[in-house]
Image (cartoon, rainbow, N blue to C red; front, side):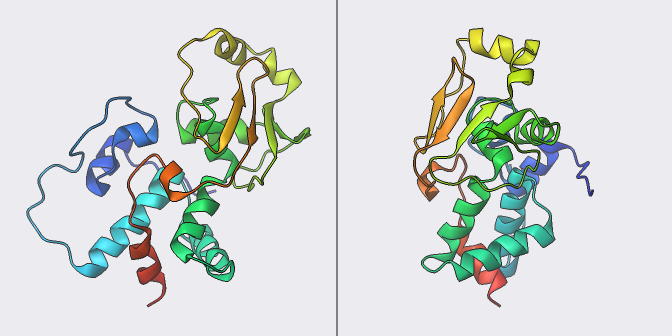
Length: 198
């Protein structure tokens, strides 16, 4: 499996992503990219937006292209479909429910089989959740100190409006499909569509 070993904060600065979107800092950095001397070309801007989404969600190029092709076949706005697909990934849902501090941690927890979807254990981070799916911590994992602390912790992050979280049972339910407004960082998805449609 390919692994990105680049320093997170350096990559955030390069792509203009706030570290808060990655789960590394709760303070919002107004200008994470700093001062840039050169003006980017149209292609450079399109490429940067694609790399930003891939970096935040931890998706490799081949898989990202598959998501784009699937989004194109879905009908409607391709850019919104693409964002909906990546937001519905199980590792992202685990992160958005507050069961992990970062998406990378969420991916590892899913890989280790700590979560169930509708009662069945799922260890595939790219699994796409559907409407009314219930994501929960496995019974065996719930006795783990990490998840026990989570029940007692008052500083639980707020889940997005498309997810309903039950803190006491360490579970969450998909009550709607995510929209662009639900994404926790700024993205110009039309630039990604333009890049792939060339």
